[in-house]
Amino acid sequence: MSGIGREKNRPLAVYAVLYLAFLYVPVLFLPVFSFNDSIYISFPLKGFTTQWYASMIGNEPLLAALGNSIRVALATAFISTLLGIFAAKAVTRYKMPGSRPVIGAIMLPLVVPEIILGTALLIVIMQAGGTLSLLTVTLGHVLLCVPFAMAVLMSRFEGFDRSMEEASADLGENAWWTFWRVTVPMAMPGITASFLLCFTISFDEFIMAFFLGSTDPTLPVYMWNQLRFPQRLPGVLALGSCILLISFFVIALAEYLRRRSSFNDETAKVTID
Amino acid sequence: MTDAFISLRGITKAFGAFKAVDDVNLDIARGEFFSLLGPSGCGKTTLLRMIAGFETPTEGDVVIDGVSMSAVPPHRRPTNMVFQSYAIFPHLDVAQNVAYGLRRDKLDKAEVAGRVGEALAMVKLSGYESRRSNELSGGQRQRVALARALIKRPKVLLLDEPLGALDRKLREEMQLELRTLQRSVGITFVFVTHDQEEALTMSDRVAVMSQGKPIQVASPRDLYERPNSVEVADFIGKMNFLPCRRLNGSGEAGEVEADGLGRVPVVNGAECPDVATLVVAVRPEKLSLHADEPAGALKIRCRMQNTAYLGDRSHYVVSVDGLERALAVSAQNADPEAARQLAGGASLWLSWAPDALIALPAER
Ligand SMILES: Nc1ncnc2c1ncn2[C@@H]1O[C@H](COP(=O)(O)OP(=O)(O)OP(=O)(O)O)[C@@H](O)[C@H]1O
Ligand SMILES: [Mg+2]
Image (cartoon, rainbow over all chains, first blue to last red; front, side):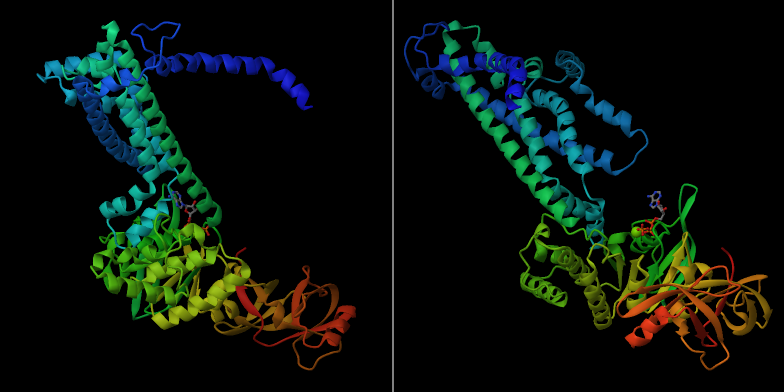
């Protein structure tokens, strides 16, 4: 029985292995070449070195770009999640006429090509007489991230027991305090997930950062600039490897938090019934 | 009632064209244990939520302690509610849940701890302070919800089927505890239930609701002994209905010609059921079965159709000549030998007291 099952699945297994290889082998070249003692990205490997990593430490422009990216990503994650909370709360809680078109409008950046959005924003900012800076980059990123934040938070708010908020009002708290004492803590897993998601989206976003940025680049833009100098390529690889490792941990953390909270919810639900 | 504490004045709640609550006028006295009883969907929850302020009446006004509530939002009303789902905050422990409503009172830590301890002791949950909602049983959660509401020292406590999720034994225990608690704190309770036994055992007065309207508001005893309609009589306990025709009498007593029973005296259940068609209603336990002819005038011959032995009592189904439907009779099994004899007997006697038969307008 199981033999037959295995027999049948063989083409599928081969496909899966090929697919994963296609997905991850190129990514694996990044750390491999980042330890290679040569500025040329080609086989055979020369020798082992950590000099590309060491060179990052004293690299002022790189550290500045890293700082920019972190600041933009933090601001984006914060603003997008906050806007996402209000928007998600509004559309899940109140049955307003025309809420569907509004949701559609907020979700639009998910399907509009980024390059179009970037160009459009650039024109608007120029027309309005604004100057490009990290602020405008953040603005673009917020536009991109709000739909994601809203999607994550809407699913959280939809599973909300209305009577929790009513209980808070019943115990004497007005809407504002109810929001902070009940709604936000109960939506915390969603808020954390939204924050981490927006952070990672903003952190590695290139097109908006390139269109709307000034001479003060974010990390992806800095890396792109470096690619014009072949001798700096191994340094970029080392940087890429670091980002890879950190992203992995951030996503793993988000997933861990999400699972832990949903596990708690499950047990809560089961015992309520 | 002159000293109405909660006064519902012409309350209507319409959802579109459908009236969930339809022109309700009710007065509830201070310190009363008042129940709203009725089948599912009759508008009990909607009515309770209008008292709490979660729903706005389409028409009418809720007055509590002389103050109109029409402009008062839920968080400012002198009411607290125990929700059907209990709504225990999952992100707070028991002590924090119970203390939730005290923030605005600006008490210091020791005072809060004292009040929480007091409230938890009242519901017998001392020692559970640091538990979370998912570490509590249904009954314990119900008590947390109760303590959380009572710590606010409300004028009115609203309870929406608080015992619905509990098993039978715990339910009966909690009924007793709630009743005792209500007496000791002296708070006015408005209690929603669809369980007639629960309403009867706990309440000072009960409003039986049907399709958004209270059809009878009375003490448990009056509801049971003197229902004012077939609907109430049928909903509260078991009842036999017999077709009959009015002969004479009005007000409290009268005489009818009932199918199978002949000319019998009746008590008028409704104010004055002076309508052409009446029914006679009689409770199964108000009929008694005898193997031999009993003394007294109110009796008739009957035949045993069916018996069910329930331990403490037995249910019998007997048929009477001239009566289409069989009658249900129930009797205590104080003397098991007599019960056995009744069950075996084919030809028996049925008797009843003069005030056992109630005349009601036949509206069904
Ligand atoms: N928000 C609403 N919109 C439309 N109809 C509603 C709404 N809330 C309640 N209803 C309707 O009003 C009627 C009364 O509802 P309610 O919840 O008060 O019943 P209930 O007596 O509490 O019943 P149960 O014993 O099942 O809880 C029902 O027919 C219900 O469908
Ligand atoms: Mg209900």
